[in-house]
Image (cartoon, rainbow, N blue to C red; front, top):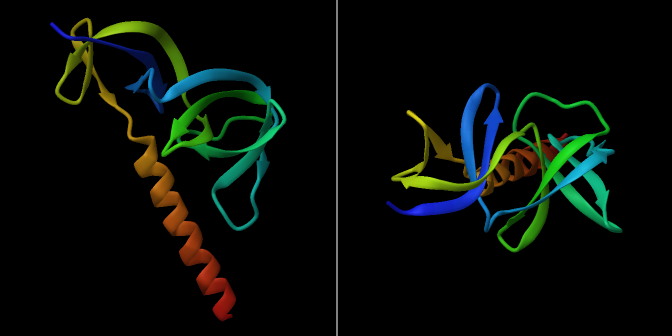
Length: 128
């Protein structure tokens, strides 16, 4: 049995898993400012402006964010509720928790999808 470290999270009622190599820390009471014309936000973490990726139901600002490293960049993730932290039994696409499987979340793909949507929105706005 292979065990992997990370966070067990809830996203819109579904279990998910983020490996410790992605999840960096929790940021309490972060104030998020929406970026006009996008589904993204920005916040200040330890003196750095950080992109905020919302992956679940909109959270009130201020709210806790999960700081992650995606493609070498720090990204704050909103909409996840951390349920547990530790070592979990690895499965093909996530981890086993009791009799349930928590799928590994691909936040990089979510960020890429939102970035493409933002680029399309900006191009259509420039053409008007």
